[in-house]
Image 1 (cartoon, helix red, strand yellow):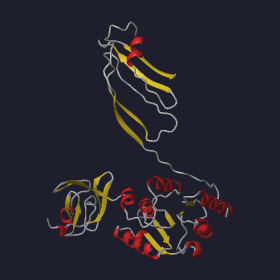
Image 2: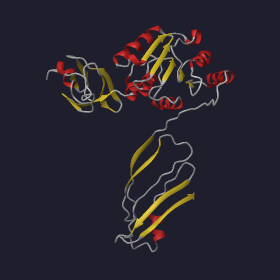
Image 3: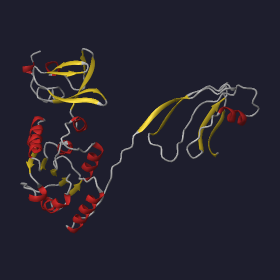
Image 4: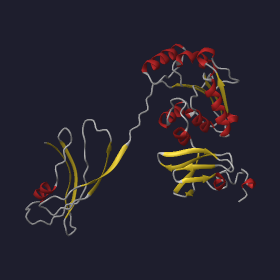
Length: 334
C-alpha cells in the first residue's frame, strides 16, 4: 500500500493517519500512546508494530503481533490522563469531570487555567471547549510551559491553546479577552484571586480552585468572600469500587440440598457489617423431615456478619417443581 497517497479527509477521519497520536491497548491496565510516523516501529511485549501497517486502517481494529494482538484506539481524555508522562502530580477523571461540570464548560467556552503541570486537566478542557473555544493556560516553570505548547501542537490543538510561562500569583494574567471560567491548581491560589476576578466576565462566569488541604480551602474561601464572589461551595469527589466474587458453597452433609455457586457483590472495604445475600433452591426430597421449617433450618448454613446479624434471602421449590417451599428474608440476632 502506498501510504503517501493517504490524506486526511472527512470520509477517513476514523482512520489512522500519519502524525496521529494513538493508543496501543494491550490490557485494561497496560496501554501506551504513540505518534504515528512513516517507517517507524514500536515494540510491545507481543512483538513489533510497524507504523506503516497502521496508516490507513480504522481505529478500534485488532492488530496482530507475532506473539499476540493489541487494539489501536483513538486518544481520549481518559487515555491521555492514564498514559501521559507525569512531570507533576495530576488530576484524574473523577475530579476532572466534577470540575468541568461545575465550571459549566461547553463548546465555545473561553477558559483560563493556571498550573498546567503535566497537562491532564488541560487536555480535558480542550476537548470540552471544542474547535470554537480557547484555553489560556499558565505555568511558572518555563520548561513545562514550553513542553505543553509543543505537545498541544503535536495533538493538533495548538490553534486553540495558548501556553504562557508566568507566575500568576505575582504578575497576574495577560489575556486579550475576558473568559467564562478560571481554574487554578496552585498551592497558594488565594494570591491570584484578585487577578482572576479581573479577567472573568461580569455575568455568568465561574471560578474553581483545586486544593488538597483544608487549610488552603479555608484561605481561598475567605478571599473569595472578601472579593464579593457568590454561591461559594466546597466539594469532595470520592470514588468507591465494588468487587464481584463467585463463592463456591459446599454441600450440606446429611441432606439432599445441593450446593450452588453464588455471585455476591460487596465493597472491598468492610467497616461495620458484612451482609451476604444468598439465593438458592431447596429440594424437598428427604422424607426424614416432617416440616418445611425443619428442612429449612437443617439445610441453611449459618452465615454471620461481624456484629452477629444474619441476613438470608431464600427461595425453594419441591423436587417435582411444585409451589415454593419458602420465600422470605430473616434477620436474626444470634
